[in-house]
Amino acid sequence: MAGFTRLIESIATLAFAGMLAGCATALPNAQSQPRSQPAGAPIAQKMKCPADNGVSVHPCSVALNAQKTSATVKTRGPKGGSFTIRDNHCTTKDIVTVMGSGNLWTITAGTGKGRCTVNFLDRDLNGRKIGLATVDVENEGS
Image (cartoon, rainbow, N blue to C red; front, side):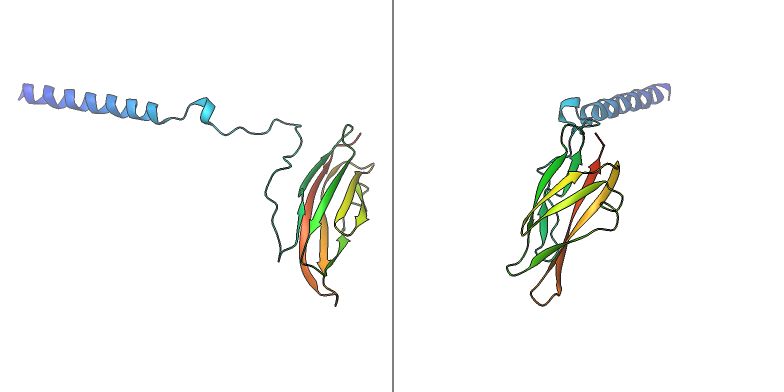
């Protein structure tokens, strides 16, 4: 009976060691880990921007600071539409100003710091909403 107990203990020890070895090899190494963006780095410009009914804006995130005080964004939508700005926070708090027409718009840092969203509303020739595209803006100030 003692020999059988010793055999079971040996098997259990080997199984436990095997589990540990399996867990250790299953851990990804540091080089294969996705890298996060360092704090204070500009927001990635290559990100996929969402579309609403064919209406989109690129880039859809803009970071402004003392070195980068403005950014140009390009709107896209179905032919025949026209864009207007819908903003209840960004320009009223002087975080940014938005100027432009057609499909090219310039977002310029204001005197206020903060985050906000600029909405680009696309309407058809009859004034009906086609879709809404948004740009998330962060102004770190100058």
